[in-house]
Amino acid sequence: MILIKDVLNCIENFAPPALQESYDNTGLQCGDINQTATGALLCLDITAAVLEEAIEKKCNLIIAHHPLVFSPLKKITGSNYVQQLLIKAIKNDIVLYACHTNADNVAAGVNYKMAQKIGLVNTQVLQPKKGLLKKLVTFCPDKNAEAIREALFNVGCGHIGNYANCSFNVNGAGTFKGNENSNPFVGEKNKLHTESEIRIETIFESYKESQVISALLKAHPYEEVAYDIYTLDNKHPQIGSGLVGELQNEIDEKAFLLQIKEVFGAKSIRFTQFLGKKVKKVTICGGSGSFLLKDAISAKADVFITGDFKYHQFFDAENKIVIADIGHYETEQFTPEIFYEVISKKMPTFAAYLSHLNTNPINYL
Image (cartoon, rainbow, N blue to C red):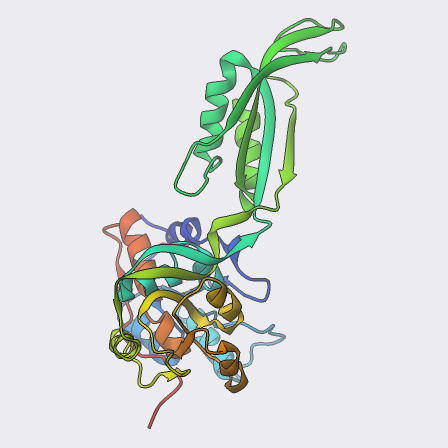
């Protein structure tokens, strides 16, 4: 029996809610996550048609990229479409869940899916985030070091880029004296003891802190565990906004935009003037990415693909890059495929469905 919370755990392990932007409302929108999951419908937006599709497919879980509830609600009376959809979902015992900017910020998320569709290689996060990393320093007897490191690695410590199980270790001497109420693992009460110890240093993502401390305390033999936690200013290379990558073969600017138009099914592309050179390096951002233009220029990219550029922002290209605004929906439309891949990998027999409804509210003549 698979519970809805089991399915959502898969999604949150992939894109932790702690990685959402401060303005966002990622996570549970309504419903009981402790009920048995009958199926999940995966979509970009929750609309009346999507809700009907979930009912027809007997899915009691909808996982969307965009939150239905974005602004605070003071009442639910059915006075607008958000309230109407919430009421209908609740009446039909359907859980609504959103995985939004946290899915944008993870390395294998929305932008990586765009890069796959385009065929980009050598991809990197365009604007890595700061303040997401912490360092743990702890001390333990020599013979316990391996077990403690393993416990820490098992909860996510020690990841640096493409490397795992990273730590620094140095031998030293620890001193301590337990009082009458102590129960020392080594040494005796009321006697100063010197123990050959190893200092272990490793990094972890800040939102994992409680898990890391719990694992340390469980694995450590001492009655009182000495440890320090430092907040780091380092950028996290695998978490952040946008993506930069390269095409395997350079291509003419117009030919590239026509290719993008076809891949993303864009009805139109708004773009700045061509610069008369081949396209090799490409920057992308799903959704609204104008805030990354300076980063795209600094990366010496030839083209920046995103959505929602305003009129005056196109001037900021300053003939240094080609901005290609293909639309908000168009850049994010493949996001439900990510959810499907994540769920299918962990729960291959679970009924997860991709909604094939076009929820783009923008039409073109």
